[in-house]
Each structure stands twice: as structure tokens, then as C-alpha cells.
Image 1 (cartoon, rainbow, N blue to C red):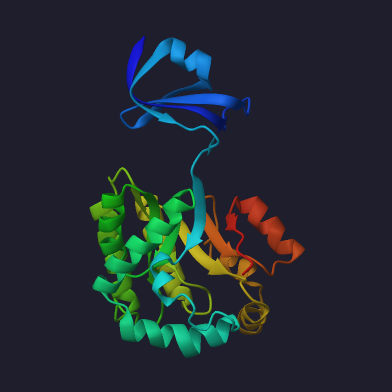
Image 2 (image 1 turned 90 degrees about the vertical axis):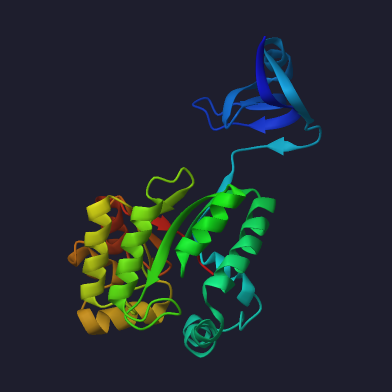
Amino acid sequence: MEKVNLLIKNCAVLTMNSKEEFFINGAIAINKEKIVAVGSVSEIETFYQGEKIIDGNGKLALPGLINTHTHAAMVYFRGLADDLPLKDWLEKHIWPAEAKYVNPDFIRKAIRLACLEMLKSGITSFCDMYFAEDVAAEEIEKIGQRAFLGEGLLDFPTPISKTPEEGLKRTEDFILNFGQSQLIQPIVSPHSVYTCSKELLQKAKKLAEKYQVPLHIHLAEEAWEVEKTKNEFGATPVEYLNNLGFLGEKVSLAHANWLEEKDIEILAKTNTAVSHNPE
């Protein structure tokens, strides 16, 4: 028998293997940081002996969930103007609150709470766009969670970066400092087409291509955003980004609630991903 660090047994096990197997009375053998075998209890106990055994009776073991769009440290703003339309929520409440309260210490404390709540909900990986992501990354590594992190890039000052150039510099430094992390994947995160100039969007794309990291942006979140983009650029938000050469297989769009048929065709053609987040 092969000795492993941990055996979880007597639980239902949902796999994501090629056969999509589901074991009613299953077991998982784990050694160090890797799952080495999944199967029925009788099968696993025949070949593996665990230093530690967890009885999962009445439990379901399944692959960790992935939250593909978060502003995790905003957990500290929970309940602040939650019932308002996006534009009012951002401009009259959230942006003023961020200017007043958000700093590295705020991020350090809030990200701990956010990660705790996610892990208790089975979320083991998340994609985040916020501020002081280098500070967040330090805490997330200590916790042992996986995260795709991108510093929010905007045309106007943020709580952390006074200019778009400073935001881009912070993003590049973050990529260089955490690019080899086992848990953290740096990404480039311009906020949206209505808060980022064409030049900033193009610089963000160029930076992502330079280091071959993902791009993440809010897009077509509400109807007014679509109308604003059409009025200013004669194109839907999707068409506008496509015209800039922004879209592609390493790009994910948060929300994408207001899409036209031609937008969907563009996203399919460019292999652009969507994190559908309707609320």
C-alpha cells in the first residue's frame, strides 16, 4: 500500500474527469498538495494508507468553485447603497467612500474577511479587480487561496494611484513581483470603456501582451453604458473594443448583460470570455 498524507472517505465525490464519474460512497487520496487518486472507498483503501483520515459521511466533495468576477475587499462596504442603480451607486456612494477609506491597511484587513467567506462557500479561486492588489496578494498567499488579481485602472485618481500611468506602473511591478507565484496570477484590469480613454485601453492591452497575462474589464453592464458608447463612438461597447484590437482569448468581460446578436458573434469569433454577472 502507498502511504499518503490524507484520506477523505465515506463521502459522495463529484469528479470532473473525462467520464464525469460520481462516487456515492467515495474516497480521495491526497499526498502533499496533490490529489493522487479518487474512487470508491473499497478501491482507494486497497491501494492507499492515510496518515490522517477524514470521515466525510453525509458530505459532498467536489472541485473548488471559481468566482470569475470580484472586488473582494469591497466586502467592507456591504450594505452601502446596495439598492441603487449602478451609476448612482458608483458616483454618489462608492467612489466617495473609497476615496475616504480605502488604503493598504483597509485592503489587508478586508481581503482576509473576503477570503474567509469565499472559502466557507467552497470558492477556492477568484478573479479580482480592485486596488493595492500587491497587499491583497500577500494575504491571499498566507491563506493559501488562488486568485487572479488586477489593479483597477481608471482615467481619474484612485485611492492608490494618482494617475493612469501610476496605475500601469503598479500593474507592471505587480506582474514582475508575483508572476512566478504558485497561487497568484497577475492580470491587467482597466475598469471600463466609460472610465478609461482609448489610450489607456490600448496601453493596458499592450502591457498584457508584453507579459502574456489575462485582461479583465467591465463591459455592457447597463443599458446607459451601451447608449453612451454608441453616441460617442458609433459602436456598441463590444464593437468599440473589437475596433481597438482589445478582444481575444486572454480577455474576459465582466457582466456583458446588454449584448446584441452582432456582439455575441464578435465574442465568439475572437474567443473572448464572459463572466456573466447580471446583478
